[in-house]
Image 1 (cartoon, rainbow, N blue to C red):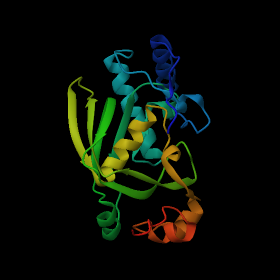
Image 2 (image 1 turned 30 degrees about the vertical axis):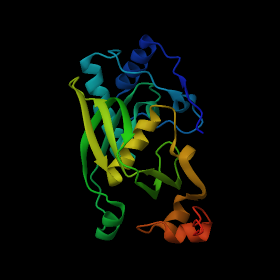
Image 3 (image 1 turned 120 degrees about the vertical axis):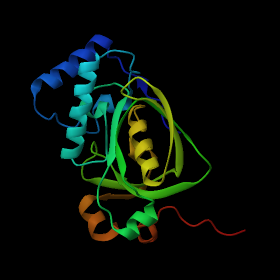
Image 4 (image 1 turned 180 degrees about the vertical axis):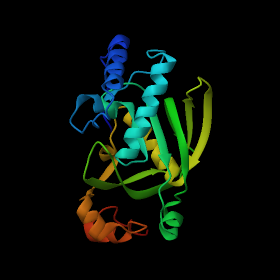
Length: 223
């Protein structure tokens, strides 16, 4: 069972001040790494702590940081901002076999405010994933194959949208960040690999070889 993260102790004024300091610096801020308390706190729901200009500027900056990293998603706590805001985008070229096995298709850029997800169906998928806040590591995580995401968009409209395959994985990963949950909390720890070992041994479309060699997710004996 995952520990429920404590709500952020940051006040609205402190959140606003933190964002304004980051924006005023006019440089790409560093991505907060695991061990920082902000990654283990339940981020504050957005309820107007930022005006529209600062919110738009923050979203644009988060997108720039995500691209520079590079990554396919970034949550505000990863910049030290305990606010329920994340950006997502996946435009990377992937070979046809990997794309098919992982059900990975391009995800157009969008930002989510106060998101939450619920599974659609009972399907699950297990693949390696990493995180910009745990640099140099990857591990296998079982995720819902399809989810329904409820969120507010940048225009203030309440929306609901379904995602499946790799897009659903990205949505779950970034939404988890806003609840103080890192992918490692849900990972098969025997699969944990640094990037060099992953690239050398386990960078296949599926996890069959890694599962066999590293001894995780054992087969369930037939009755």
